[in-house]
Image (cartoon, rainbow, N blue to C red):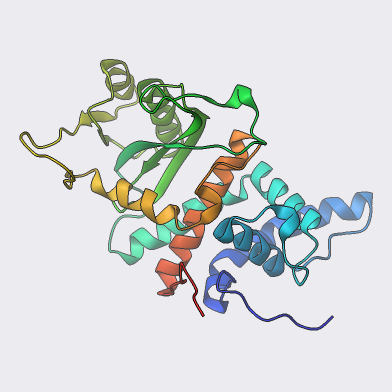
Length: 279
């Protein structure tokens, strides 16, 4: 096969060095199992990751992958396996620690900033996984994210848009406390009710609502909370996240983790990818 040219979304050598150990360990575990039941897998993991990043960055359907990638059904299958085995969550945690240490912070965060984003869905999303957003009066999903004070993803929960921020906030805080026991502070928006605030106190998280400065109009930077707003904006450069195309909510969560993995690796390697390429 003729070697293909590179795409802007491809892993660089420095980028690959950050993700390869985790993927290689996963492959070694799978290979041990495969030797017992049949032929071990042979696909190049870097090529697989390049194809998955291409989908996440460009927003195309799996079956529209260019033919110079690994066959799309194989790539989609690897994405499903990595999602099921928690590889994207594992990479997010590893890279977040590296970014924090590079910024002179402790590897484990002690504070988080939750927020939500209402997003339109595609036609292939099951109706039972959607809901009507009371504020926007349209059927869609919601992404509930928790980030540290650098805007790096801690946890994500995708629900129907009808789920209130308070109800989802309870689950988000529970996930955060279980995965990151060092978190002791959370800055939330004024929409969080007493239920979420009291729930956060149980695992020892001080949930503090951040009010909009009184008397302000239009756009204003809100202290503490601007970091997650910036992160949501950066995630949206990955066009697969511009609308929710995933049939299952857990696949939506995986795509968000994947976008954050891409952002953190480029932050660590001081690389950038153009959002729009014009000729």
